[in-house]
Length: 515
Image (cartoon, rainbow, N blue to C red):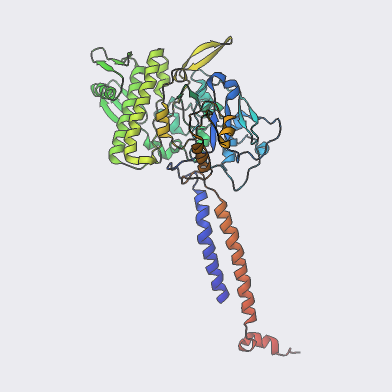
């Protein structure tokens, strides 16, 4: 009895110590928390020399070994990132047998992944990532189908609307107009352009901050890809004098306005901007920063519709102070606007979004403080124009050329734990090594670089990446202690047993066998 009691006690002790550690690992996908986020993944590029200098640069602990002359298919890149983070398979067709060996107890600590798309697929000819010795492994680019909607959308979603839906685009269904976000679009392909950082003339060009949508969803970075989170989307319902309904997302939780009320809200929205604005209510011409938008044109009107809907949703959210893992702001109307807008209008539109997002971020910061994490997701094709370079027609981004969104101070304010470095005036060995790999990143002094590198090795956020070493350690330690205790009490019980006081044992050892 004593041995059994001790056995139960030891088992409970092991369970109480080991199970909570495993529980943290099982919650990696469900918990997305952004306080004190860290990252070991760096992506660098140089717009003018994108052919040679675009590189995925993991920390040294990522890549233990890689064969000489190795190559990696572009569509396997998301699986490589997931693999080094200890994540699930993203593309079932990916062959992981050639992936580098990883230390079981030394996984990456990228709690929140920010990969910024700043260069079009045609512009960046080749990409690569570094091995531990500093040499580069090239990525073999994958050919993707062209479509009339947007090359970038095709890259993001994989094949076509029947299989996945074009992310950020509206599709007519039996239930009405819906967006691909709410139908859970999960791509089976990923493009390096979707996971690519770009800095240009001291400005960060942000077209989308997101890794591969399926990769981000697997790690819980984008809870809005789950149907359960669809109710958190902002929406706008417009009563256009009984002429119809403009449904941005869903009618059920919509912000209802009359046509005149919408114009009034657009005017109030313009007052938040640093640009000069003027509204002509007779002609419905809205001038912003010298560019005139005709609100009788649906594409122009829908652009401001979305801004009004998002601003209202954030105001309502700030008032209620409801807790959400992530607040999703979509500006998919830029794709529609580009079909009818000129270069000046597109440049001003990007500037307007930049300022509105900054204003929204300030409001949310009053609620969440340092926990704030705002994602910029620009769906649709690159905002740009075709230019001639070396005899070839290529798409150049307006945002990259003009350096509109966001400024360095805005980027540093919203993403303080994303590690970006400058290669000038380096003295320490760590900075010297970075100098050989990184190009055109922001300047920070070497002690700061070293401290951030050291900090990035330890996960600091709850929920997205946990180190399982503690769990394995407790399991192995307490299992061996349990075995020792069981053996000890079994031997102790046998040695202390009194044969004469046990009638059953006495009869077994003293009774003569009957014939």
